[in-house]
Image (cartoon, rainbow, N blue to C red; front, side, top):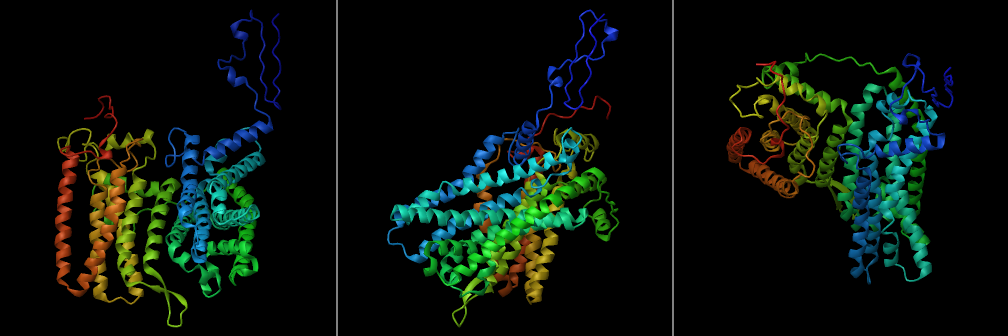
Length: 612
């Protein structure tokens, strides 16, 4: 008689099977090939660590930051990127800190406070989607024998760990060297270290918790269908604000004494100035500028408020996300029957393949937060640079500081915003969405053009591969209309608006030609090529092409306002450049010229002989 099987202890989830060697096969109830499948679930302490590490890795395990799960390498690289600037700035100050005037010392202190503020704010905004668990987290982890409370504790711990690591890494290495620059004794050094640490850490905490608090508020108060589009808008606004503070650093640093002295009324609306006031108040006490005490109090209260909002809204947002994951979100899909859709079908999207790819692009960007991050990042940078160019801080007749609009900056608004919008869309489109599903495009679109029009593997996309350029052109056209409306509200003349419209249309056309030159694959279907990013091309694009484009456009716009004959020159020049780029684009698709990253594809798809 064989030894009977033991019962299964469901509470401990331990499975143990014992049987005699002589048991006949028909009596064997369970056979396990993988011994790891019989391992018990770890105890609660180990489960918490596993979940915490899992949620922490998810901050970095994506196509944007890392490949093949290289989490540790990615963390070290990003920490080094944020830790180096303060340390290098401190080394640069070493030969210049002797007999340095108080105005320059305050500007130096403002830099370290500002950098901590900007670094933590950008990190929290970039990881906006990962601060709260998404639908896949609940759908994958909740069916496991895990308690919801364990998931909540693990996720919140991972968020605090993520923010804490970057907060400390950003400010730790420059803490002692920078404090030692302006300390003359051990007691002075200790006092300076305390004031420095309090200011930079509170600035970083406020900047990191503000996006988290705002996300929690909109997540708990707004319907699910509003959360995604509003999140993109808020991400863009946060990125623009942080980059704008960085660009305005020399200007604000030069006027710090006036801002901290209470001479400027809008100083209380500049968050980095709050923590700079705390720095000065802790360093000098009653000798500090007059408004330092009140501004420091504003910073402390603001930090407490956003921290309280995070504590209140994070559990509520967690519960709401869990409910949505379990119940699902039903959204009605509207059919494309608008006048704009009909117009596009009759003009630029006349072929079914083109319409399919166009809707594939729009729906992918609309539903995938990863691509919206690119849109928010690039658009925020462009908006910040635009505001920096448009707004000017000047002294009025009575000696007070006031914000004014710059005429040259308004002329730069159109090319600047269009360039960064087109750059962001192209960056998003070059990242893959699902490599396992891309076979449908070669199969269904290989007859978009005649088989002998292009050599393999460039034959199948045809005109459908250029839909990404059409999508970018339409987005830039919409932005052009918004800019024209803004300039109209500022009472620009109709002739000036006409010149702006011509320049906007010209830039939109040429940027589409340039950014998608030689492209032979449909958006989101090209695999990433590690190590193939051309730093030379990137440097030339942003360090040479971008400034020349802005300066040249400003000169052309102002010259056309003075001499209308320049309008004809603009149209002829744009037409000639467009024709040259189109010819070069066709040559690149035919393989006559090449060298573009888009030209590299995987092996040709297999059809098993089931197609023509």
